[in-house]
Image (spheres, rainbow, N blue to C red):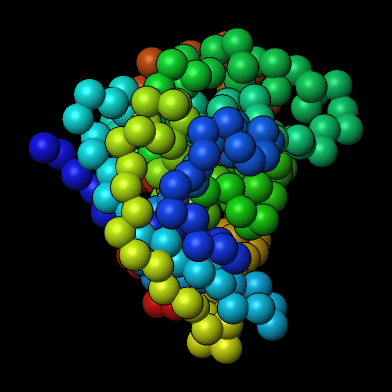
Length: 241
């Protein structure tokens, strides 16, 4: 049996997550969102002045259709296409509308057929980075490095009724906002500072922007979209938070 221990940060104890309940405009659509990182779940659970609850679950992945957007066969553009399909972007130009249409047409994987999804979590920072790229303000390399350097975390999303039947509640823990909210803010601030530093870097010849992707009609199998090519050999070591 293949099992994962996953955590969900919330205001409540949730012993049995309910399929079909929640917000439809989450990153990957309607679902139950968790993480394998207990510390991240604690940060996500708290808000300013309010304690939270971290629920621990055991997830049996046997027989589940899993899409891991961090796997080699997917690029950041696949993740972005799913984000565009579910979240509301501030698109104010005809170019932005065309960029959105192109991503949905060329890079949107059949994620609705999956039981379980794994990938980046588009909190306020990630969402603003993605929006800048879609509006041609930053290169694909800058977006990729920002996502890696930010260490804002990966999430595990349960999408299907079948997946909900594979999860069982283990325990819960009260999370003190006095300890964990400052950590949450520090992680967010760190991500934004690194992003600001990258945006101030000089333009580099050969980098991919959304406009070039449209002009050249770049497709998902283009070698330039490989993560190692995008980020090159830059030092992207972790950021202490």
